[in-house]
Length: 340
Image (cartoon, rainbow, N blue to C red; front, side, top):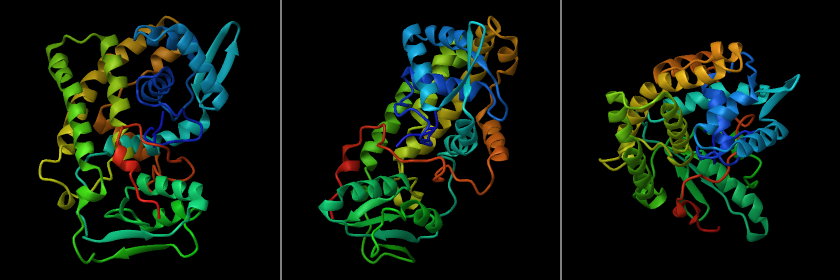
């Protein structure tokens, strides 16, 4: 699965490689984070080329990626004289509020769990393998894990969203149930790859914890902060695609998500103002309008902003903006699902 830019939302208009390190993901993250999506901002290609060049992404890679993103419909373009301007397309801009709200709120203390489980039961033969694989991808995206052959379980998935999402892939005799309790023992570690997920959180912490001290010491330059913020967002946006967001009652006592969330906020809030300086300075060499439009929000400000722009009923998993794909993280056990 992926997300806007993944976001953590995967639009058919967005690049598949959004690990945070590729030229395409850097471009879309850059344009989505530093220029407001609720009005059109045209950015000269020279701004994008120079910014990413300072992050050691070659001009050829940037220009090739810009062309591909435009052909895919991720970016809109306009040529004035010899200058080509780029902007996020209307379709992508409309998906940003929901996807950013998911990114920025992921890991916040969840609502108390009511103790109920949602179960999906189905049987699809090998001859319908493609349909079965699509169904599994949707179930994983919705936070389900395989309890046994053809039975998937989730503590949080809302019935209306589940039914809407998987209706096309569930066979006629498939069942979606909301149960008050499950007889027997449900072992989350046997259903979800919690050990692998924990190691990913620990790797995230190890990668970004030093940045907290560097930022506090004032030893991070604006362009370094830009690279740091793009990499941070690329990593963080991956978590909602693999973490089923289980309630604390179903998690090990030392589950690291809350600590990683605090680290994300600390680094993001400290790095973004510095990064915006770099973007504003370089944009100012090519376009006063693009430079004046640069902004940097804190996590708290982002949550408020995206909550305002995204309708309360809009979900980042809505079918109009989301299509699940394979996770960016290497979690072999996610694919080690029995074939019913």
